[in-house]
Image (cartoon, rainbow, N blue to C red; front, side, top):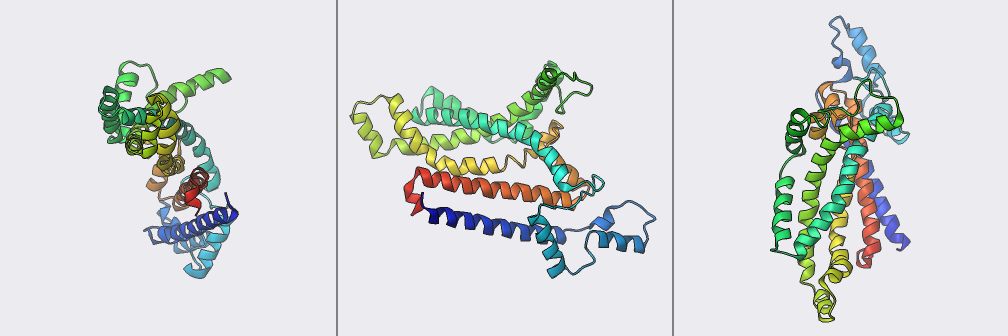
Length: 322
């Protein structure tokens, strides 16, 4: 892969991130409310409000003072302090929620990519057959359902009804301090939300992969491979699947970028302590510094995974580099 292609894509990613930072600055200052109005203290005097505005730098001109300060602090990794969490640094609050979200959504993405691509490839290759009818039908059902719609029946049946799994949370209060016991406790809480998010993601990957395989089947090189006497299994594995995978690279990269955002509705339903639940809490508290930090992390993640997709796509298909 030539250096010019890498440099060009990297420069585009940096420009996009710079635009995101400026957009976040404008967006959150255009929203109603401000940190000095969040306090519920009825005895707050005008002097106290002025001091609070000075603390957040809101007493200075919007441009260039506040903009320059915001860009400078963002570049250095200082995202401010949270209002809801009583002055705790935003980076610490967000960092504590990233792990549970990656565990849930990241693991769900990994399973869905493997199962969804395999199911979509088989459905597309055997179009009209039993595998296609069952697999594509189930994929369409799960793809059309929000995560929380999939999760609620799971809670009613397997948690509230049968009592096999916990109904919410990530850990059980007062659970065993033994490391093995802690892992098993987290695993038990993880099963239902992981199942919900995986089923939803499998549907998306399966449908798109099926379409890609159907298009690939009509290519001349597939006909040539059949004329050479190659088996269907070998043609699918060595010819159709690798070429059908190319359009999936971008879609996978975008989805991986949103892993950091978490499945907000699903996390709320299962009380999973990830970034999705944290986003709802920050919205309810009008914690704008925390919301800025979350949105910045999600946006940068999407840009970086798309940059990775460009590199992978360029490596797989030389035509893209030109």
